[in-house]
Image (cartoon, rainbow, N blue to C red; front, side):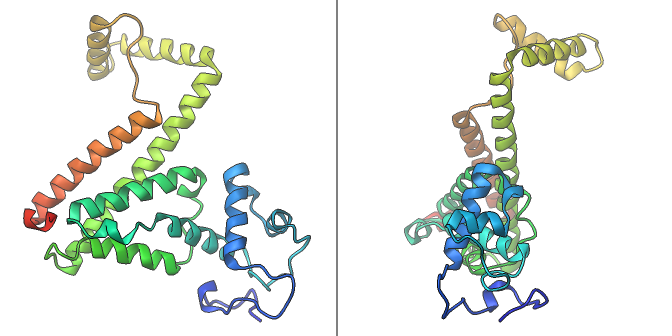
Length: 254
């Protein structure tokens, strides 16, 4: 039986066997994700997972050794959902890379709490599968391995950053909807700053917007649809730039 001091990743340990009741790692991960989605990552504990599974208590070290193992299982479950169908990888490199990017962002936004707490998770089998798919998407580009790694990293950085921005924007929109008086006070303060002359670029934008439409100037998009459209524009611009910079032939687009 593994102990808390066993430094091997959970994936290198055998699944529990020969004892009832038995829970699979997938069941434990699913319970942990349900708790985090409903109550936040901080609510995920072994006691809470046991209650979610209806297990009463779970023998220490038998299923998982510590919170590190739980985090690893949670990230691997999320990455399993990020995997795209093989058919998405059979077109050109842009379509395949974009499909992976869209799916990744969609799943991250479905678990908004995961954008920071899972950063230190142990590398698991579905992380390998996700990376394998990303490499397969670029297999026909003729890029050397370091260039493929660079392209994947650039897209991953864009996707994770955009997902974080979108989650924050939607959270602010919910707060604004719940407290319109706070929004009105914030807008009034922003207008006062714009009119102070200390922010010439913002003042010019404010004056342009108020001269072409009645009422308050429009803010950044705060709906999920608008944010997704913004993501798509940025993704295509990024892929355009990477294709040009890395001199990827259009013939690889299928």
